[in-house]
Length: 345
Ligand code: SF4
Image (tube, rainbow, N blue to C red; front, side):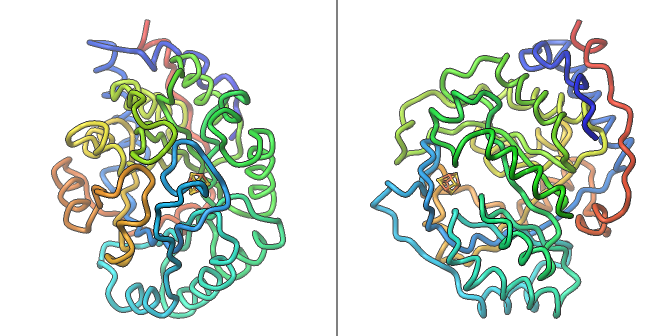
């Protein structure tokens, strides 16, 4: 799964327009249907803590954001909701938080054990950079997918936006997780201030070298209460082009439609489903906590069950009965990548 060169023509794809862009997106959609049919994985996310020891300049939950009411969700209410009140279409749950080892011990580990015992849900976690013993404990408790985004491909940019640690450390953690039995999904931000298309192409190429089973493309949105407020948001076309190029480079990967796609463009979520995405996420964070899980702005566009199911139905897709963790657990041979050069030259 580490065939460097798969994305060798990515730069032309990032800026594709007109007929070349249409061909790129059509090919990405066709590759998705060819590999996954019309089924889309449906997971839930619960955001369990907005405490964070990190200070990423693109995030509203950074530790220097003093005006934010910090919270940790309670195990019992999350467990009750996920066991007894989750939407029928949900096969998996992603437990997500700021980088907060306290919530990992006090809430996440007990919740994984409860869900493992009481439900058939596949379990993903997105908890930041932790120590290897804690990774092992999470995996041994029943989680199987770790989401760790590398954010960008250029070390100086990574440092400038104050992403956690260094890029080299982040990549080392991705490899450590994969080596220790996790299925790893990663991701990057497209359109950070000053980022040229060549950098987004480099992110695609970097993704292709990593031991991943999935990857996301998140549009840069200038957060209201971050040091990057006032900077321009990502060019939506380039974001969707990155998604399409990612799909063509890795037809076998699971690519999520991230909720921020709706902030970059009206109906962006649906456009993501036409550009290669095959995973949707219903936000089940308790309502009273949602407003304080602020990555971009307090007035969030929450992907409710109705919005998610409407989007996939409108695109002629259906919820997958097979869960994501179950899919990942089976051996998935890498499919031959589509040659980007044929689409963009
Ligand atoms: S992006 Fe993640 S690690 Fe960075 S400040 Fe936000 S919650 Fe913390």
